[in-house]
Length: 336
Image 1: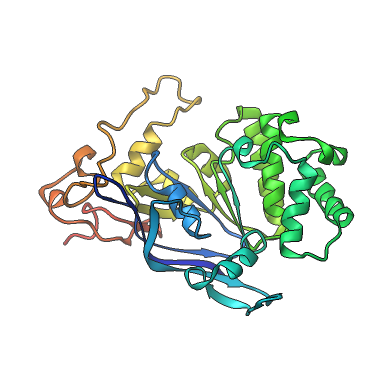
Image 2: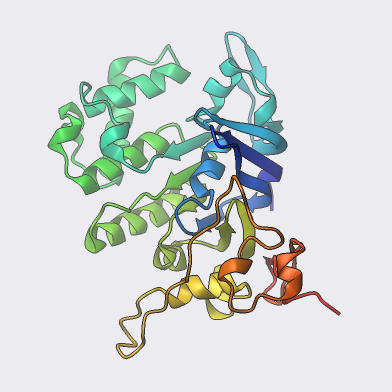
């Protein structure tokens, strides 16, 4: 299997008046072709920052400090200023012109809130025309619109609605439009950042089903960023649990849900309501995530962990192989 994406020891920091906060801390991941990786964790754990880093879209005052992001491209990309050869490409070494050619066509991003991501002054069709002509100036408006109609219809939106404006769509349909914009150039990697957060459960289920179908239809490789573990149970092949910018656990989805290794993962799963167990009491994780400007020593989770030992307060646990076939960063494992 081809590795579409490889992230190596990535560090992303935000500089504030109080000091420097490390939002992504030495994260390494590999994602194979036609696989879906779920990124989960509490708000502020670094999920979205990691996702934006993959396209060099970290907003100021954020900065990618070190590491590498390798994207595998399966064809040459040629434009008037040069050519990007197929094969492994370092995203962090690309200049602005090269990034414009990669974004959308090879790696696409679906942002959290479609209402603020879509331009209220432009029709839906104009959005599709602009993104296609940005990568191929020779394409005619009519040709771009025909392609837009095909994509929209595959997402359950009538073709004639390309002339409508964002405010004329419901939240679920706007989210479908955003997915369509991400797919129109047939990217190799699609990053979906909380794509169903503001939707009701029925529309959420429809969107997830459509995304699964599109993944198979277009042979997509996907990263799904969410705080909703139920969503990942339905859609992800593997799940990475992040805490304070670090990987706490990475495992195949079924194994992670059946046998979570990290205490943080276990606590997250216990806090999810289960309609099949009406007598089950909802659990919660005591305390709050630490201040990233002044993080605790040792394991970042130790102030909230019921299994914390002395070593947890002194040494950061390494990321080691777990019994589930994945990785875990916890002093409960790997000790003689």
